[in-house]
Length: 324
Ligand SMILES: C[S@@+](CC[C@H](N)C(=O)[O-])C[C@H]1O[C@@H](n2cnc3c(N)ncnc32)[C@H](O)[C@@H]1O
Image (cartoon, rainbow, N blue to C red; front, side):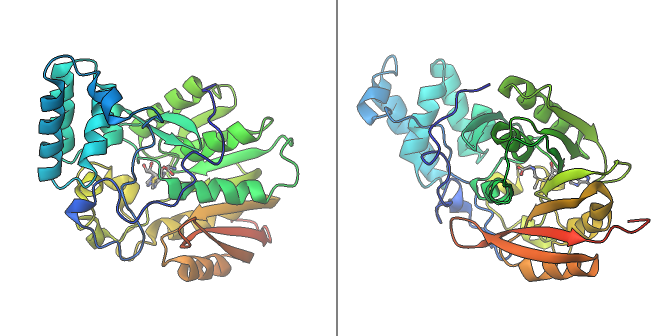
């Protein structure tokens, strides 16, 4: 299992209002879909130390890279250039990585990894880049569990990189889980992450459309479904709009299509005393709660991210009926 960093100093900070890639502008009307700053910069990456790592003409290389990134609209060009430098094995790679970032490719794709819940996840263009805001889902689940030692069964709908499921498995030593995704490429990434992080024997990944064809009795269901209204996607920052999979973003005309698709099958796959935690866009709490109510969930609570925005709804207490 990957070495864990000290809880509290990892990505449990609210996404800053101006993060990586904000220069392109985004409407972000229904959610804060800010491409977040990376979490790979180490504590020792002082400019002098980093500049010392560039072989020849180091300072000029770095200055040129900062200028390129800055011209591409990247706000923290200096920090990002240094981060690339720290990760580039040689000058040629450094130049290639700077060019990719200047084309607004997300830093996580260039580095091939992203930290979530203090765990290091491999990410590619085939899965959503895990967001710090999604840690609200993990926190909400953990806060709802009086006994973390139970042999819980977890279902993660739209698992992407596997970040929600694997973060939960890292906290629940006797739990097992199933990650579902429609994207076979995303499932491959999630599977690789599970093995690399040491959860390969406790996590299973299957290709499904949400709950279709799944057997029930999960104690916990989590999901961060796509929830951006279709016509907002192209107005998001280029890192998101150009490089992240549409399947991971597009929530249909009003952003709620995935909830409409997931909620009817949710009661069937949940154990009678189980609960679900769904990530939502900042302005979707009321609508998602209303939808859940119509599907027979008696208890809905809304949970905020560290930026104070509605970010997750927890659904529990329902009557199981034949056929749903
Ligand atoms: C917003 S991403 C979330 C990824 C990951 N859980 C996270 O929090 O970073 C939504 C995920 O749902 C998947 N997805 C979209 N439509 C789906 C469907 N009909 N059935 C299953 N998965 C779907 C996408 O491929 C994507 O991986």
